[in-house]
Amino acid sequence: MTGAELLLNVFGLSLSAGAMILVLLLLRSGLARRYSARWRCVVWLLLAVRLMIPLPLESGFVRIELPRRLDQPQYGQSAVYQSPQRDEEPAPEPEEQKAQEEGMGEKSELPAAPEDSPRRDAAPLLLEKAGPSLLSVACGIWGIGMVLCAAGQLLRYFVWRRQTLRWNKPVENTTLLEQLAAESRSAGLARPPKAYCNAKLGAPLVLGYFHPILLLPEGFESEPAAGPVLRHECIHLRRGDLFWKLLLLAAACMHWFNPLVWMMRRAAHHDLELACDEAVLAGRDSAHRILYGYALLEHAKKPAKKQSPFTARCGEP
Image 1: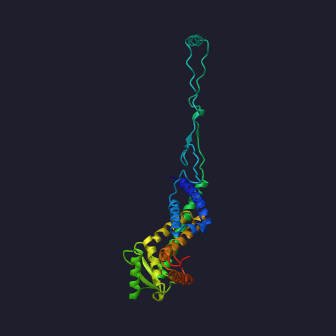
Image 2: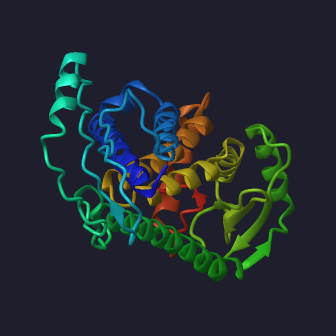
Image 3: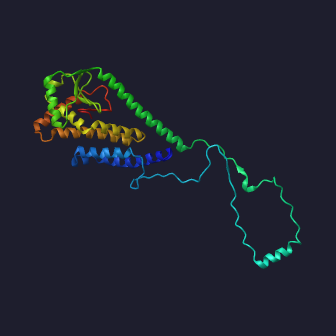
């Protein structure tokens, strides 16, 4: 697959997926009443996976194909264009052949053409050097934009990580560690993540993919809804939401020119948080729900100064 074909496949896929994203966003309020946030997350993640596979499908809404062209010589080379061969004359009949042989003596011989005379069907035709096509320029712009978008997100993450992790202090409160271990088992984790207190955070968050850690704001152990909030973060880890967020970011970088893909990423982040909230509140009474809702509102009032696209934070919009 050439770069031009890849660009056209990405563009056609972005148009077809963008139409579906627009429909889902317009019907989001109605879908929220009929389907849970987890099912909405499944739809968003399937769309993100499809956006990462730029291959044409017969069932797509939009399909763009490159026009077929004749074979042309390579850049800077010459080609010889030959005139089409004439059809051979049919062989004369025996009587006609005999008459031609008798008349050959009466005809004078024609002078032979000089050997160095040019032949019209073998005249070389030099092709002019052509510059880059418009499709090649568009392919370069798309590739540069994708690289810059991904590099900007990574740079933002590493700057945020360096400025945040230097404020980490290991959690030493025994009661809080026991509560974290209990909520981890309740969420289905094999072992609890390492927990740290951080003075720069306004809400708990999980960070890391293969060795995740839990960052808690100072004074978190005194919160009345500390248990449900810890379970919320543990559910993020069990479901692998950080990997899903990375996939959504990769799809947005590949389709950086489509604002609907970025809107899909934001909606998917919101639904991932709601899905964890639904899991925390499943089977709980109204008093527990009110307490947990109050905790979410308190964390939403104190957002982190610099949020990272590679984290999952409780109360994130």
